[in-house]
Image (cartoon, rainbow, N blue to C red; front, side, top):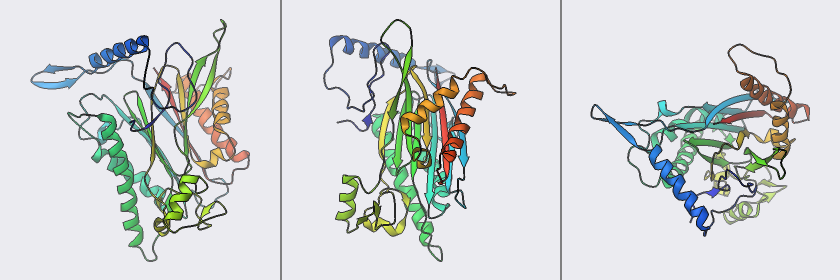
Length: 356
């Protein structure tokens, strides 16, 4: 049984399905042979070399390079209740990496409601808790350990905030969504609560000899609102109600950090998780609060970014490459366009470029 909902296996030659599927139970002999070759290459890349009695890791070749760009807009709100984290290299926070891992990156968006304290608390503490719980040294099943680490991290972040919130006079009632992207070498793990979203742009060759490629939009997160059957049933089993699409007619999400007054009604802090192996066909990841996706579909957001990346000319900026200027512009313009389209909510966008 798989630990995560997986995106399609990466392919180098054939088209990629846009649907989220489980890993296949049976494969052809050719596919098995490809997997064996890939496994041998990974084992070679994971080999360690010894020097002066210490075991040192060999830097893996062919790992993706991720660069993060962020844009935030207050919209029509009196207060900016979003928060975010950009950690392209998280190694400084970790006591030790698993021996088969070379690099860890972390990116997150937190969309607060009822105030900004829950989102700010999560942005300040979640990655620190994650670093303490992250597996290191000789490990067994890394996927299982990362899943357990993420579950424990979200649970403790929620408990720590609720403890702080309840100690205040009057008690804080803030809550926050959380969508976190953890990149371990070339594997992406996404854990999320609430309605902020993450989507991946993957390019696919089209049929024909013109060499054209089209974009696929792959969802990396799961939306949690009380109108979804499984979410509503959990809330009702806990004695809560769903009115006008909201918990008790008030709260718009069914999972969150904080929202202590709704925890007894079935609002939980257990994230849904997905994983996806990055490939040379991947272009970027959009990580954004629901303020963006109220006025853009996921496909529209991806195409909006692609159009800016493919524009003919760009204004050069000191210290930045042409590609970096394009990604920075795409990130800023996506956030601004969301506000122009009438989003009154706070808007936060993290755009992650993927390069090999």
